[in-house]
Length: 208
Image 1 (tube, rainbow, N blue to C red):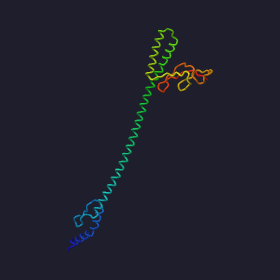
Image 2: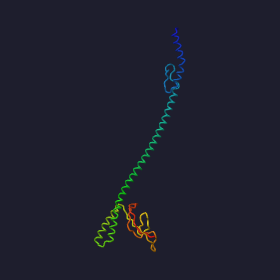
Image 3: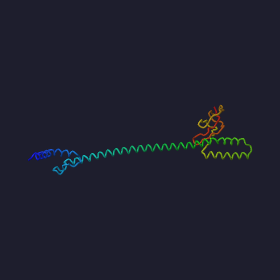
Image 4: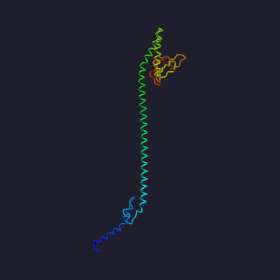
C-alpha cells in the first residue's frame, strides 16, 4: 500500500469516528431531516420530539398573537366608541347652538314689535269714538294672535306677589291697610315671556 492509499484509509477511519457526533448534531435541529439518513443512520430518533416542541411553540405563538389582536381590537373599539360619543355630543351641542341662535333672533324681533301692542292698548283706553275703538280692537286681537302663534305669553302680575324673575319694580308706595307689602298694585308696562325665557320684564309698582 503506497502512501496515498494509506492516507485515504486514515481519512475514512477518521470520518467514521466523527460520524456519530455529526449525527448527534443533526438531531439537535428541530424539524430537519438528518443529512446522514440512508447511510445506516435512518431518521433522527429525536425528530418526533422536535416536531411536538415546534407545534407547541407555534401554538403558544398563535395564542400570544390572538391575545394581542383581541387586545388591539378592544382598544380600537373603545376609541371608536369614545370618538362616536364625542361626535354625537358635538352634533347635539351644535344643533342646540343653532336652535338657540334662531330663537334668540326671533325673540329680538318680537321685542321690537311689543311697543306696537302697548300703543294699541293705550289708544284703546283713550279712544272715545266707537267705530275707531272697534278698529283698534280688531288690530289688537290680530297682534295678540301673532304673539300667541309665536309662543309668547303676557306677564301681567297685578295683585300678585312681586317676583323679580318676571318683574321690574320702577315705583313703590307704603302698603295700605289690609294690603301686604311686596305685592304688585299697578302695572305700567306688561311683560312677555317665551317658554320659560323672559323677553321683556313687566314694569310695576309694589307695596313696601
